[in-house]
Image (tube, rainbow, N blue to C red; front, side, top):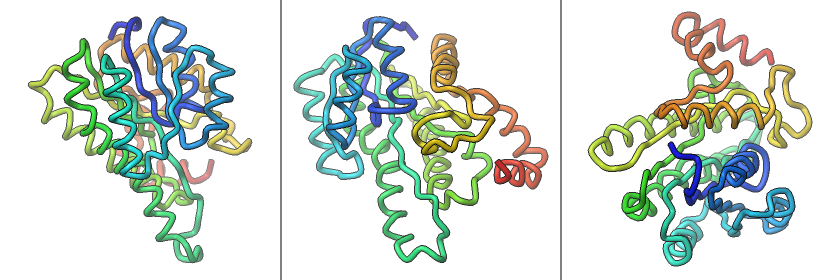
Length: 245
């Protein structure tokens, strides 16, 4: 992957890993567009990374995804990279939370339906531009779930599976389908309570970029590779370890 002269759309790019991606990709000479449902967070993001282009969009809503796609087609038709990064999590007890189903609907729409739909909406446009890529952001939790994330694990595991199938189905088209599996990263996601093993967003994105430069289709960042092997050879131990953090 060339790190210059790309036009990149990052969903959920107003904070955390998405914002760090925007910062690093902008610094290396790319046009970066970030979307978020919060105009206030996007304003703050522009102050941190002055070169980015922003668009307010709640990607959990089908109409807003379609509006985003039309806006991209009309204003940035040279787009060649889509990074499906946006995600939400509900840390709840499924049985005790009276709104657990409603929360699952929102989480599935954001974490799974949105990347599937945006990939479909933008696929034709991506494919007419040089070196097109769809990059789906998942997590080591696709291998070993955390017990306090009843829906997040499931949505990311489903996105992991979808990404593998999409890569196979598009193997004869001029587009690369990439999955980046992140470990625990110290971002606002953890609301100030990140585990001690968390790595910085800068380190995580640096490793992601090294994988992209190497042309990898699946990039296991940090200790995700170790978690993968543990899940295969000692699944019970892996589950206990993840849920003790």
